[in-house]
Image (tube, rainbow, N blue to C red; front, side, top):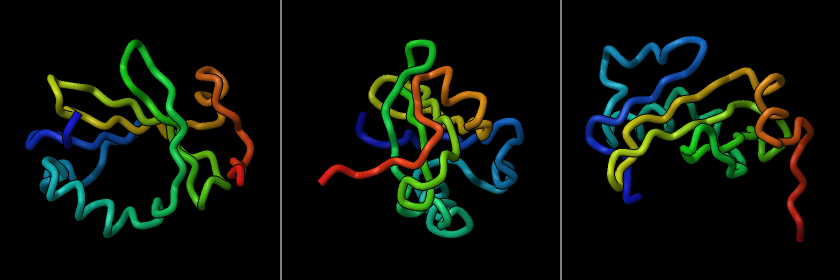
Length: 107
């Protein structure tokens, strides 16, 4: 995968990203979203997993201290077509073998 496709969309479940109508599609808009309103995710740790054969990640915010979202990528060729964020970490993480506690970084 090289980068999100120009038509890539960010979806947050159970609610849809409010900016979808105003342009939360494509690499530049998604970058602005994550560097603006979503800056609280800065420093997140991602733990790889899979969901229905698709690449996925457990996201831990606050430098790994807070289980936050299960992110499932939809792939189209060598591009990311969609990034789906499922925010019910307490329910979903155990189903995908992801810990519900803080991550510690090994030295």
